[in-house]
Image (cartoon, rainbow, N blue to C red):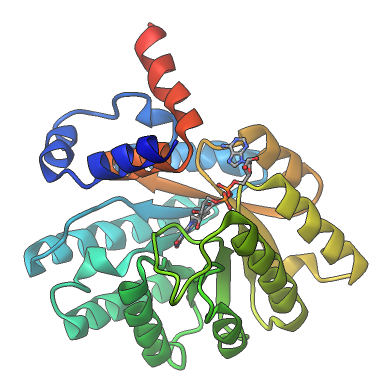
Length: 304
Ligand code: FDA
């Protein structure tokens, strides 16, 4: 299992394979977890979700951005998607990764890019923009940019990773900011992060409860873990919490029956919808996370 995970992580980091994959459409079964390579196909996929009572948070896929030109291109793609969401009237907002819009090039340049995105989103019906969190260094930079922007904009939020020891304080710090709570997807050292699944799950539940009792803004519980979802549902019922300020989130293509079931039970549900030509790294990380997802690849090869 460990070997498989490392193997797919290595594949996800291979820049030559990333570049080669861009020349092909969605291959190897990636179309099951990536909504489309362009804006029209992605809007179409969001309409299908909306028809089931599910909203979307849209992510423009992109990796290895180390120049201002690439970052500006990615920013323009995000701006175009914001406009398309607004004009089409679909129920969706956007998630962005700051490394894609210049965090590794120059922090001030990245800050200006985020500001431009927030201004555009504000003009497009005050659309929400979520700043995804990445590895620890970039997460701290993302929080620093959030701290500069949250006074000026109400349509910006971020993600709290439950594996980080500091997450409890961050949740208190951002009571009035829209937050997504996740377990955390990167490999972090024991000095800063819980290592075992048990410890991470325990802290995740603790953080969900802490946040739900104190939140002054929307909370997204983003997990495929049915035990944790059931726990959260029980907690919401026990404390008679306002469901308008709570939603569940999962990734596009994962546990779709459970997604629909939760939406049908009257909870708000939002699906993370990745799109774009740069699908390869994202797809490999999903395989690393859960080797059972390999079924997507084998099915695509063996199903004509
Ligand atoms: P986990 O993978 O621990 O699974 C728990 C259990 O759930 C499994 O043992 C299994 O029983 C069941 N299960 C899980 N997947 C299943 C499947 N496909 N089918 C059947 N059963 C399944 N991370 C980050 O660091 N920064 C971020 O910004 C984000 N953003 C984000 C958005 C959204 C919408 C999601 C869903 C996730 C993220 N993440 C993230 C990723 C997150 O941190 C985490 O790595 C993954 O969600 C995997 O953890 P889970 O909570 O899904 O459960």
